[in-house]
Image (cartoon, rainbow, N blue to C red; front, side, top):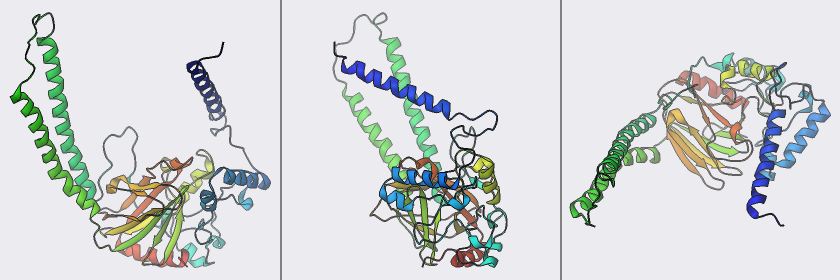
Length: 383
């Protein structure tokens, strides 16, 4: 007898579940070492090159041109630094955006400027608190760092009160009807079919509520979408799976990768990279090797686009989010009011490593920003 389509579907789902369970068991952390069992302890240069070639074959052609490639010179257990797919210069050098690579040698500076490399102080060059980041067991929003975020938080709170009142009213009416008009208490049901005052009420009241909400939400929307004149202009391009930033008025261009990208789960090597960049293990998968640096209080206008697929650039503490669509230029703006470090994530599914393209923004004083510009112009020239 031929199996039914339902039976074949259930059999397929069962096979997928068994395969997923087997993979999860193989990837479980080793109790003795605390690292994933599917990650080799040490790879030779040939193995690292083979793995990089296999990873490149699995991605699309545009992604393969932009994705980081392993360096055979660091394959002996050291972290693999990404290459700059935009201008061909090495972007894994100690960077002026607030992070350093794991290679402290002056040769890591693409300009060969040893003094510039040594000029970047420890902890990324800025003594800044981490403000915009997720918290364990946290609920609600991150602290608002812009006026837009404050307005969005207020609007959300107002809508929560309205929605809660509607839910309680509808639930109360349903319970009252079930208790008052059940078959036992009301054996003879009514025969009417219309109630004009009630029908007018349940039509007019929702309209009034929506007009009230619109009167407060539309100004917030216009505040986000009406782009003002900026003090700093940055073009951000989403790639699989990193970000490219260009300070269009300053001739600065650099790529931004997650610290530890492609190096497996958190391990001592990644922890050392995070510490060298001024982060802790808590910021793993949030911190990047280079960061957007902006002055506090300045109006920053960002032009957002994509190089391959749709991405989305967002910083929750700023109250901004904009899709990066290939072939289109979109804009967002913000004016950060508090110095600190703020994290974000790509917020549009963009492929297998979507979860590994975070965003780091450092808000610094105007003096520190000017000093950073001087370093970045020498370290990350756009041409």
